Length: 119
Image 1 (spheres, rainbow, N blue to C red):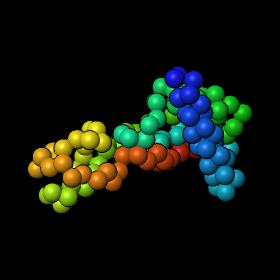
Image 2 (image 1 turned 90 degrees about the vertical axis):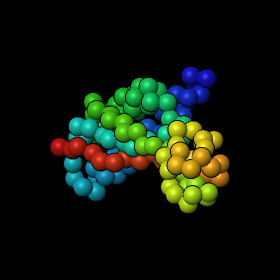
Image 3 (image 1 turned 90 degrees about the horizontal axis):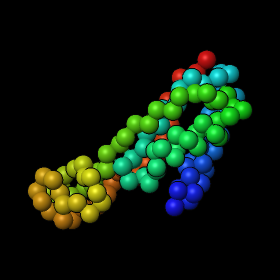
């Protein structure tokens, strides 16, 4: 299972590297000191595997040696019983506001680069 997870995170890091390299060309920077990524609760990202993969994939790029900071985003759902958007820990949770069970997940599965610190 670890190998499958690591392959997923390697692929994610290759995408991050591509975005960083495109930004370097477009904005004219030559090195990246830190990368902050937002990761939703339900994104299915193994953070230790992502950190390992990041160091490996960034070798030879403008982000080699950059620090990876991972920012957790909560799971969110719309409750159709009380019509409120609420934070949830698990996809099958009941509404923490009204106890209703008619929840539609609306957030927490995203992963995106928030910002870069560059030189």
